[in-house]
Structures are given as structure tokens and as C-alpha cells.
Length: 493
Image (cartoon, rainbow, N blue to C red; front, side, top):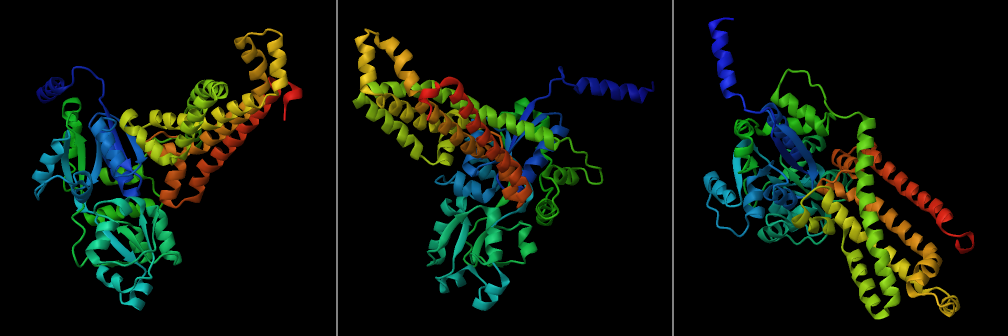
């Protein structure tokens, strides 16, 4: 061995880690294509730096991902400076400049690791034909046409830098303003269903549909430069990964990001392939992803896990609650009212409400599904017990049967058809609602549905929708069989 080789080997051994364990780095992305691509860029960068990587894809809106980063459920994700200033740090006095922004983020245990180099600002887009016919060139021009209809992303409708402040800044009189998924808004605009939508300036669809971007003549929208955010403690756990993230500074300009978006949205390339092509140009991308069969089995496993655990817990809690509600009528009104109120909370809102306590992933989804599963079982258990013929109960009392014996050997068997019907209803509801769990990283058949909507891919949507529907039918059939086994023939409906 040559002297140079020996020196190189000694240097390598001197810098090698004491143990071979690779740190786990959890990367997040929001529910739009550019964010998923940037998440893949971070994931592959971290992998190349020696980390085990988990990419939690297509999570909900800004607050979901930001709170997950602060809680420690995520270690890194890409955000935009305008969103940080106007939404996340709203109400704080943050001076202009990246150093002041970094200092404000540091107060929350977050480091601004890199400014990627491109800007993706909000914009308002219309079809060229409408712009020409109405003379629309700037956002101010919209004020002259109050009958125009707008479709904005749901997050944009409520953001501090979104529709309310845009409306006030420009004095826009429009009232026909609806919320819609960002990827579906383009289809609505192209079909003429709406007249204007909010855009991300690096969207590939702008060129594809030939849209006209209206000039922000009052400079309402701030800068939205893309940045890499990491938890401050990642420097200690994976310093090489943080250094690699910092190396991405200035690496992506506007045209590159538009091209990456187009490769996924228009050319149907995977986000992983787009990220690999950017980081390692010229190399042949070898997918390490799942086969369709393994992906289906993983989604089935995740979905069954969500439904199975939540439904089992709901049965264990709801049947006793139903018994109490039937035996103590005044308390029963409070029990039925409480579980009824839970059912009125929108499912997505309930999922998000669980995140501060349980983080992202399966735990908050299971908790939300458990709460949704209570009402049908409690109500049917109560109805089944209170609907028993009083003569039958009087006969049981006349035989001097104890309360406990009478409940388990007379009343519950007689109420079994009603209880099983409630459990069956709860199970079917849970199978459908569990698809929303993908928005908070719980997986299941909601994942291909979300991805299909984002990529406008009907086949991908069906890969999630059809198995979920089939699973609901299978669950219903399973309880039909259970009823035949558990309920005596004379008591079946």
C-alpha cells in the first residue's frame, strides 16, 4: 500500500463515527407538488449525508407542518419567507432581512438552514380570453367587475396574507368566492366554472393552460423565497445532514423549480425521480420504491390498523356507556348529548385538534376515529336495552334473577341485534373517515387519493377510493355473518 493511500486511510478512520448507527431524519412536506419535490430533495440530501430518512409526505396546511416541526415530529421541511412572516410569525415584530427572520425562528427552536434561491409568490390568474375581453391587466382591474367568481385554496381564504387582506388592500367587491383544492382550481378555471384563482408563481400549470397573471400593482404580496427549516437540535444529532442542507443555498432558481414542477405535474415523473435528477444530473435513477402490490398491502395494513384499533376501543367504551344511559335515564341524556356533539365536529377539524396532544401520524387519527365511532354504538345499545318488552323483564325479576345476571344473560342478548347494528354503522363510518388520516401522515387508502387529486390522476384516485369502498362492503358483510353467529335466529331482523 502506498504512503498516500495509508494517509488517506488514516484520515478516514480518524473522522469515522464511533458507531455505525445512522441518525434518523424525518422530513415533511405539504399537500402540493412543489413541497413534495422539495421534501424529496431534502430526503435524498440527508440520505447522501449518511442518515436514515423518513419522508412524511403531503401533510395538511402550513400550521400542521410547522407545529409538527416544533413538536419534534419532523426535523426539516421547506417553507417560504412570506408565509413565515405573514402567517407563522404574525403578530411578532420581525425586522426586514434574513438574519432577523432567523433570529425570530431561533426563539422557537428552529434554524433557517438555507435560502434555496427561488421565489414562489402568490399571484392571481385568469384565462387570456377573459383578460382581453374585460381589459384585465392588474389586480386593481378586478374591482371594476363585481360579478366575477373566484376560487381560492382553502388556506388562502383564511391566511393573514390571503383573501381577506387582498380584498381590503384592493377594495375588491366580489362575493362569489369559494374554497377549493389548489390542483382542482386549474380545472375549474379552464372549464369556465370560475373566473380567477390564486396561483403559485412556479406552478407548471400556468404555462400549460397559458394563464395570464395579473400584476400585483399595489405590492400586496410579500417575498416568498423558499428556505430550508430544521430543528435546532438536529445539529447535535446529525451535523453532517445540517451541513448538507446548508449546501443547498442558492442551488435552485426560478426556472429550475418550474422545470421540476413540470416534470412531475405534466410529464408524470415521480417526485423522487425529479429530485434525484436535480441532485445527481446524468445518473440513471433507480427507484427504490414499492411495487403496486406492496404499496396496496401497506395501505391496507395502515387502514386496517386505524379502523381496527379505533373501533375496538369504541366498542369497549361505548357499550358500557350505552348500558349506563339505558339504566339511568337522566345521566343518559348527558351521555347521548356528549357523543352527539362529538359527531357534529367536522372530521378534518377533529383530526387537526388532536395534533397538539398526539403529534402527527396514526395516533391522532385513531383518537379521532375512536370519538367518531362512539355515537352509533352508544345510541343503539341504549335503544336496544330500552326497547326490550317490559313483560320479559318482569318475568326475569319474578325468577329472582340478580341485576348482573339479568343484564348479561337476558337484556344484552335481547339487545344484541341493535348493538351489532350500531357497531356495523360505526365500522363503516370509520373506514370512510380514515381516508382523511393521510392528511396528518397516518397513511391508509387516503394517501393515493390525495396524491391522485394533487396530480390530477384519476387512476391513482381510484387506487385509494375503490379499495376503501371495498373494505367498507367487506366490513358490512363481516358483521352480517357475525349477526348470524351471535344472535339467535328468533331475534334477527
